[in-house]
Length: 212
Image (cartoon, rainbow, N blue to C red; front, side, top):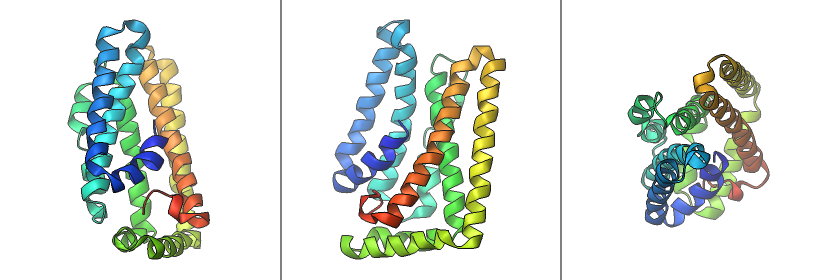
């Protein structure tokens, strides 16, 4: 659920933004149906899909129409933030927790993009022709191999691991929200590995990254 928006949604919305946008509602209504009409067995899956639909929606809006304006990335991805917070104490809590943890991972990513200077190259990368964008993205990714960037990224990664581990421990204490804490921990940890995979892809095969 974390991987799909990065490596499937990004190229899809780049080619057919409106159809990718409409798919947000398919995910939402599928989750709503499973949560409300398929019994307890499928309720957790339904709740999770609702959270995925919010992440997918924010991603579509940004990557489809605002991709050359990185400053809008986090605000647009936060489109469902008030809804998710308000649903944390309801049967939608798993989806809300997934969305909030994914958003936290996005915030970490964006902060690192700013600190490492990648954000300055972002508009150029997404606006250039495909052949040129691959080269620019590869050169930009090489900036992350500089000492300051590596240290900053390592600190952020350790902080993410610590938060995810804390969430995992909370799941054993706060039994009423056990599943929500576990989903949050898994989503945040997976965001870290996806970012690592994205970084490796931009270095080795930038045209497969989904950004261009």
